[in-house]
Structures are given as C-alpha cells and as structure tokens.
Length: 283
Ligand code: C2E
Ligand code: MG
Ligand code: MG
Ligand code: MG
Image (cartoon, rainbow, N blue to C red; front, side, top):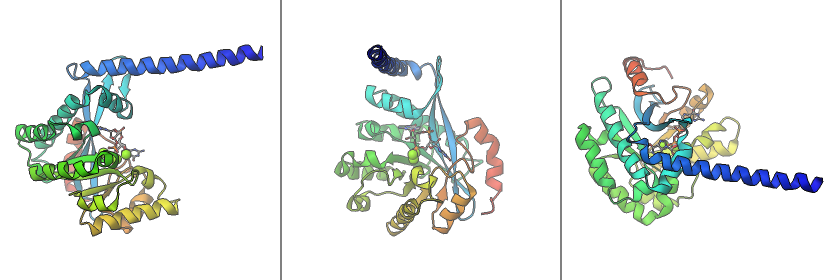
C-alpha cells in the first residue's frame, strides 16, 4: 500500500507539472492576441525626491487583464513574452503609451519624468532606437523626460555591446537607469563605462535595510558608488517611514514604494497630480 501511495504521489506531481506546462503554453498563446484585444494597461508609480518630497517621476508598470484569469503578474507573463518574441510589439506599445501619457500630464506636472522598463530581448532588438524615437516623436515628449530602465542582468548579457547600445540611446537624449542593481554581477569597470544617469537599489536590499547590517552596507555602497560616478540613486520597494528616513540619512536621492503610493492607473494619477505638485511632503 505504501508503494501505491508513493506511486500516486509521483503521478500527482507529474500531473501538476503537466498542468503548469500547459498553463504556460496557453498564457503564451494568449499573449499573441492580448494587444489587439486591448488587455494591457499601464500603471504608474510615483518617484519622490528624498531631499524635499518633490515628485520627480513615474515608473510605468505593465498590467495584463486576462479574460479568464483576471490580472496576471508581469513576473509571470514578461518571461513568456520574452520567449515567444511578443515582448517586441508589447514593448513598443508600452513606450508609446507611457510617452503619450506623460505628454498629456505636461501642463500639470512639468519636468516630471517617465521611466519605462525594457526587457533583454527588446534591448538587443534591431528596432530599439527606432521604437523609442517613434514614441518620442508621436507624443512630442522632450527626450530628457523619458528614462529607459534596463536590469543589471540585461546589461551584463553582453556588457561590451551594452556600452554601445547605451551610447546610442544617450545620443537620443533620453535618461538611462540600471534597475535591480546589486542583484547581478556588474564589474565596476563596466559600470564606469555605462553612460548611466540613475542606479536603482533593488528592493531586496531595501526590504531588510533596518534589520540587516549586510543589506545596509550594500545599500550604502551603491549610494557611494553612484555619487562617485555622478549618477543619482533611487531606492525601490520602500514600505516604511523608518526605511525612508534611513535612506535619506544615507544620502539616497529618491525613493518609490508603497509608503508613498502603489502603482496607480492613469486616471488615479491624474486625480492626485494637483495635490502632489503643490504639496511638498515634509521629510
Ligand atoms: P521592477 O521594474 O523592479 O519594478 C518594481 C516592482 O516592485 C513592481 O512590480 C512594483 O509594483 C513593485 N513595487 C513597488 N513598490 C513596492 C513596495 O513598496 N513593495 C513591494 N514589495 N513591491 C513594490 P510589478 O509591477 O509586479 O513588476 C514586476 C517586474 O516586471 C518589474 O520589476 C519589471 O522587471 C517587470 N515589468 C513590469 N512592467 C514591465 C514592462 O513594461 N516591460 C518590461 N520589460 N518589464 C516590465
Ligand atoms: Mg523597473
Ligand atoms: Mg527594480
Ligand atoms: Mg525589482
């Protein structure tokens, strides 16, 4: 009987793995029609200066409303879109939508930037510069208000090539940010050669900044590194007032996180903008 139970256990495990694989396949297939069916939406998370509480920018974050499953996390569908190549057209849509949205907020929020995430495949694509230029031209947004985020992992896939691509992007006049910094293995020699404007301290360090001396030391090192390279630093995933205060003491420039606001729909942002642009949150 023990043997039987063991057998069915193994069988159950296999069935679960098959279910998971076929779910992935279905999701991957569903991605092909998601754009034309208008199932994507961007949410926007405010980025706040630590020095004076000023709104400095937004990060655009992609949302997929799946007809059967409801909201699917980008952590789940972005890798699938990477694999099946849909990330290229989805990424073009994200760029265009984010630029148009910020352009529509120009009167209310002059000088506020929009950060857009690029995946590895998008970053390596032949149409990268063209799709960014098209989004800027169509929206009329000044290039300096667009910030392109790539992860440290993406940057290091082919670091030598990354230097060239970043220089090309730089020549468009856009800002460049390195996301999830500290989670990968950038060599300092490359970090110096990447023409970056912003380093983003990964939220895994921010999460434990109050309790872990190690994570605090890493965060401090990132902040020092950025300042010696003339880059600014933004901390992501700030959920508590004490984390924000510590980051401020450490010399971090800006933060984003649930403490100030989760990512919001365009409509919710538009409602908050007048208040955010007048109030200087005391820090
Ligand atoms: P990311 O670029 O590092 O984005 C930060 C993630 O942290 C977002 O998750 C955001 O909602 C979440 N977050 C913000 N504040 C807090 C906080 O205080 N606490 C915690 N625990 N989390 C917080 P989200 O929106 O689920 O996105 C996950 C990842 O998916 C992003 O990580 C990014 O790598 C990717 N992604 C999202 N949108 C896009 C996109 O348009 N294009 C590409 N290529 N990737 C995207
Ligand atoms: Mg990001
Ligand atoms: Mg990040
Ligand atoms: Mg992250």
